[in-house]
Image 1 (cartoon, helix red, strand yellow):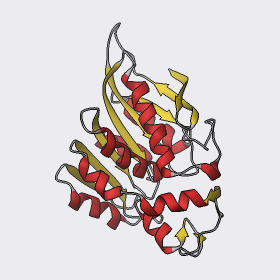
Image 2 (cartoon, rainbow, N blue to C red):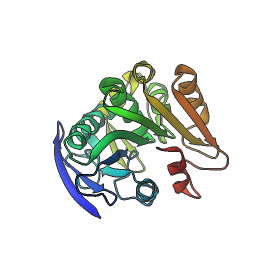
Image 3 (tube, rainbow, N blue to C red):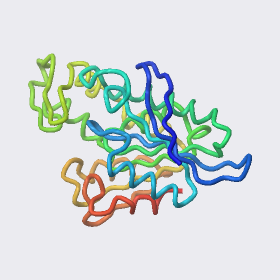
Image 4 (cartoon, one colour):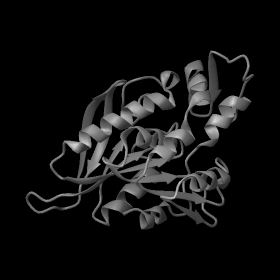
Length: 244
């Protein structure tokens, strides 16, 4: 049964969908916090499929709308990846307080994968039991430095105030933030179980970025799925196979 929830983050009200498997009275289960990509939201077909695949394994899920997305507070133009980390940390605190929580998984797709890396580096494996990165968009930092973010081009030495992309208009703060993200530095801080899943047909993020992450961590398992795209088309449920 899906329950609509709200909680407060540094960016205002965040809206999420909580799904728990059937539990005995007083029972507990693992709960995965699912973090969507840029321009997406908590109830896309991709997010719904991943959530359902985990519920079938007895893993509860909390899907959230990041600030500036879906039903949550904030504007898309004001959103940054660092602000999304604030939303994710607040989601972890929310799940920690649930009486049904046995352990916490953090599952991030695309830009949500980058936010997951930064969050895990700050929070640590004492709280996050399993970090799962689905086609993490580490390429965004290079794009911000080189003047091309998701097809929006600009002079990296003279940043625009706004940058139109397919999902809306990014603000200058987004670009400045993305250029400075300590992605690899935070990734190596996390010492818990890590699974990186990436498809060879991904036209948004080259698999080389995930391969680089794998080289940085002894705790990381890299799963390369032949023929799967950025949102793991043709069948996103396959990612559930690797999450436990």
